[in-house]
Image 1 (cartoon, rainbow, N blue to C red):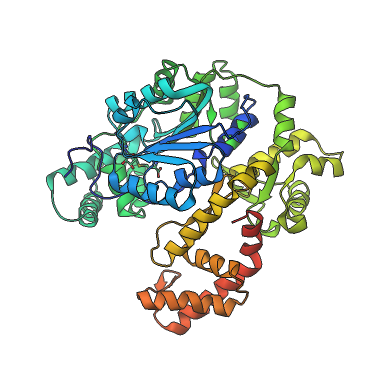
Image 2 (image 1 turned 180 degrees about the vertical axis):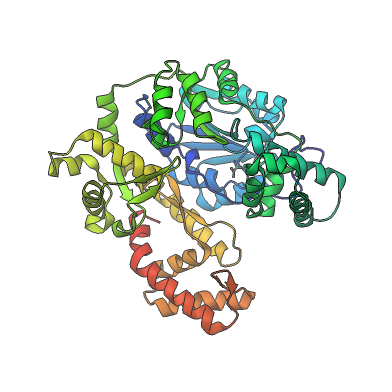
Amino acid sequence: MNSWNEGYFTDSTYTYGYYRELSPNFLRWCLTLKGFAVPESSDDDCHCELGIGQGVSANIHAASSTGKFFGTDFNPAHAANAQELAAASGADAKFFEDSFEEFAERDDLPKFDTISFHGIWSWISNENRQHMLNIVRRHLKSGGIVYNSYNCLPGWAPAAPLRELLKLHDSYHVGGGIDNRVKAALNFVEEMIAAKPAYAEKVPSFAQSFDGLKKHDTHYIAHEYFNDNWILPYFKDVVEMFAANKLDFAMTALPVETFAKVGLSDDAWAFLEKIDEPILREQIRDYFINRQFRKDLFVRGARRISVTEAYEKILGTRYVLTKPAADVPLKITTSVAEVNLTEEIYRPLLEFLQEDNFRPKPFTEYLRRHPEKKPQELVEAATFLVDANQILPCQNDAVVKRVKKSCDKLNAYLCERSKYREEISFLASPLTGMGVAVNRVKQIYLALSKAGEKSAERLAAAVWDIMSRQGTRLVFEGKKLESPEENLKLLTTEAETFLSKELPVFKALQL
Ligand SMILES: C[S@@+](CC[C@H](N)C(=O)[O-])C[C@H]1O[C@@H](n2cnc3c(N)ncnc32)[C@H](O)[C@@H]1O
């Protein structure tokens, strides 16, 4: 039990996730798409993340963006990990062990271009939310951006009693390690649902939410469900708190929602279109899509640019594929809905992006080759493909050059660390200013191939050597592979795919 935790669950450390919504390059791209004025990145930029957790996102962004990075997390183990990563990259980053209250009182902080917080707002006390707003009020530049994500109503309404149950069970069964506590609470709810409570019968999504929850990691479940504080605001409540601190709601960090109709039926869209007031429309949209989690972008003094200017900027941005063109499905899963891409429009565009070894290219280059294409169609293509993470917007060459060294150092450190620990499955791309998912085995392959190794068999043997010494085994289709032959066979197949498909993309992303 800790006394510094202000009701936040700190009996275990948080997971090592990565979130691109915390990337300054991604945030700027989203706002430009929606027609907001955003300053170009520069060496004078200052960015801040509050509640950095293990600091994976914060460090990837500190290494791959220009300017200075600041962040804080009151959990000393989190702050220590973040500081270790920063020392490895050599990026201009300062990560503190301050609580939000302490951070708000610092007088050695600059004015920030972006202040981001992911997965915090719903799980802290009112006082702490106010401390975060004080930081924003005091330290955000005019025109600065704030990103905030949180659990919301109405989507959470049916499953809110599930959280109450888990927390209730835990509060009566003190003791044991975190795994036991989570498992005991899950077993309790499982048995309870089997006994058919009327609530579960009346609200079928209750049991469905529980089934979804069981698949998560115990540390994630503990952080999500075992906190003292847990609020479920409506969007409008959050907008009001931010407005009182001079922040205008701009958009969600979900690019497809720029095309307002995506994910909605014709009836729903016809209803929403009649609502002139944007905040009301956004709130009602949450009912139509039954939204449980919001990713909101606010701007201090939002300024509009013209549609033509926004289109020119979006089409003038370079894009890079995140996989070979042939592997991009024509039915893509965006953050809101599945979207069917038109083959005649998308295949040639994806093949264009693959040309010259995946060289990043602006869509204006494609338009010059195909003057018959409509700019709006290409803006839409960029939106769907970026949303579904099939392509990513790139930083300009001068920025890439400046951040390359810190990314190389961070990536080398992460690949080396992955030999011993399966924790961080992301590397930093200087090209995009974002993280790229690269699992432990692929990180080791990448490090070896950078050192000149080209044979799939030797890559597999090197990984197997590490795994067998540590007593770890691969799992294939849910089954643990026990014999060396089975493990080596799977590793060799993975190494072949790595060399033929992933390595060319990783090279393009400058990993
Ligand atoms: C759910 S985690 C999210 C971490 C990270 N943003 C991510 O998404 O991976 C919330 C983090 O906020 C930190 N935190 C909670 N309350 C805090 C406070 N009052 N001051 C500083 N950090 C806090 C916790 O230690 C934890 O690492």
